Image 1 (cartoon, one colour):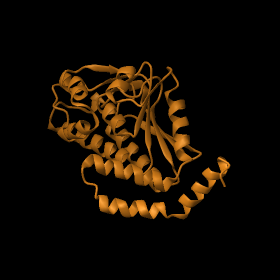
Image 2 (cartoon, one colour):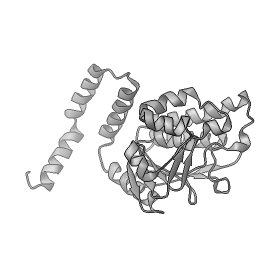
Image 3 (cartoon, helix red, strand yellow):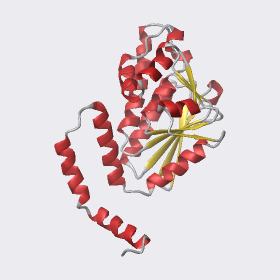
Image 4 (cartoon, one colour):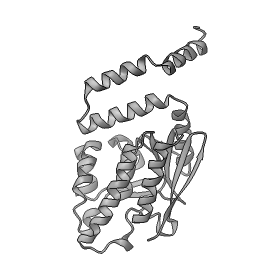
Length: 249
């Protein structure tokens, strides 16, 4: 199996990089497992935000074709992709994808499970499963259906269309389009702003949004969380700090 992830952490921001540049950062099962471990560690540590990027000039060309057999054994790749996507969703801190160049197949699935995609002007998104004679993992399709409009999902998955970064903004895939070669720096700057905010409020907000998307949120339970945070020492301190900055203290 080829490829790995490299990690670096500074000022509360963890950067995770796909390192398989010789294969356009193809996603091997070992790379996906390493990604899951890095994200699980981020949730357990002092990390306040995560940036996910690819080495070199591309995000990822998708699943590593050298590990696919064209048989039912390829379910192992589906499972590895599903675990990595779940690790992104379940990470207690925001995960931001910094996309340069191609973001194809399983890489797009991972990016769409992030909390935001910052894309360079030359970024390109595609889900070419039918080109490989494949019905994309139905579990993933169900998740993507909650993330994308019906038109965008049909364009990508059924018609095999490609989407550039500006069109991605219009379709709701991409949060921000930046100059070529700056996606990682811009994503990191966004992550640093997030890292300065309340970790408790951020974690609660991310979990609430996820549960609402899944249709499993108990608003009674969340009202209790809301009241606990509303009456917390950290909130009082942050309100006082905001007043002081505005000269209202």
